[in-house]
Image 1 (cartoon, one colour):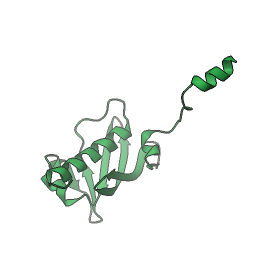
Image 2 (tube, rainbow, N blue to C red):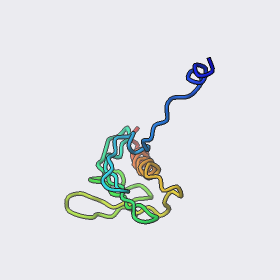
Image 3 (tube, rainbow, N blue to C red):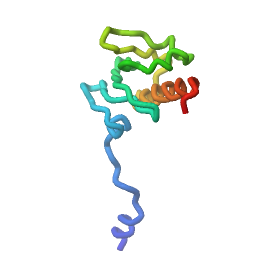
Length: 118
């Protein structure tokens, strides 16, 4: 009886997948991820690369509305193929790449809202 009760009362089985894995991002190396930054306004290819205690973050062909966001100076073009580096001043203490993805998506969403897109 006890085992049945424990099965009934316990939560869903633990999943050993990180947030970025659940969101469709793929591991490419130990601390490197590729996927898409997704908002209700669209999706953009991205990369998150662990580099020691920091992350290097890249987005391909960011939307034009980002140029009016206060974080625009943090974006720097990397190549002619459309990749831009996003300089993140403060990295998550727990080194969670999911927090980095959410941050970029929040900035993208804010840029669209600032441009009057809802």
